[in-house]
Image 1 (cartoon, rainbow, N blue to C red):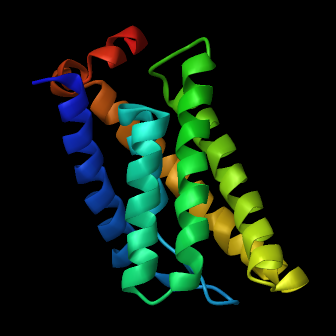
Image 2: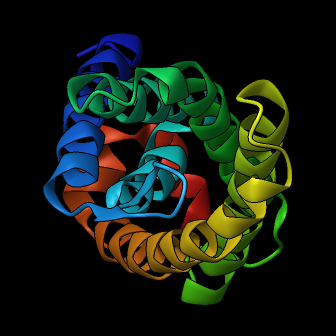
Length: 176
């Protein structure tokens, strides 16, 4: 199967998985958002699909969850923020000297999650007009980010050790 078709199929799968993971566990936050498990799959998609394909899957899956649950005001920001997270995590992971270690994946994931916290603060305070009330979202977003980085990194490492995954994504062979 052509690699572009394979990536499209896996990006579609990651869109669905990210959406479902975001919807399954929701803990409400002070100004209307929620903490969820979707970021683990944002990180996983970034590492397996690469920044752009993983970003499209992360952005669509997360934004769809916002739309389905009535948080439509967050959907545009969520799409952009999750896309940026994926591109950031993938780019940092590719530049780190040691590949296929929990620490290298975790470092890339943590930096991407820090971007998420900062970007949601900007989106909520300026675009949505919450002003300094958006500070109340920093701890919940940081909690979500830490969970996403820890679990996402573990999932990445588990799947990168799978022969099937490496065969499905030939570009991953350089991380062996």
